Image 1: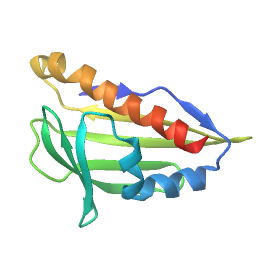
Image 2: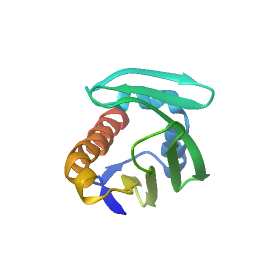
Image 3: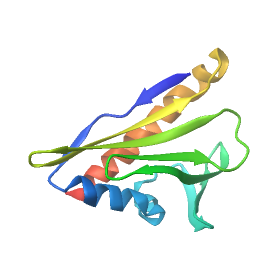
Image 4: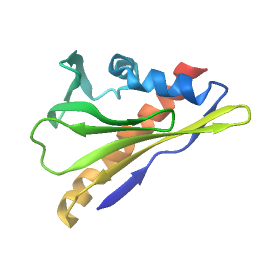
Length: 132
């Protein structure tokens, strides 16, 4: 299992606010990297068409208010993975970071590690911009 962690961002928004924001899949549209050609919500799934990869259907499968949101693919993908959003309350707001746990063999790790890392780091940066 490969663990990829985004940078951690801080905001003056409460953990409850962040949790509610990330629980709403439609809010992820503005967090998508440029290589996501289309984004739509259908049956509680976010459907992404990612350039060079294809369609990916993500759904929130676990939500621990206001600390954690876990998303899993709902369609067939080349390897198992999840995306976790961790939210921590601070004295003046909250801190947020994302983690991807991916079941990658050595060959897949060489091909997928950087794009996956870029994916969550772009999302966390865009989230930071949205919360400012």
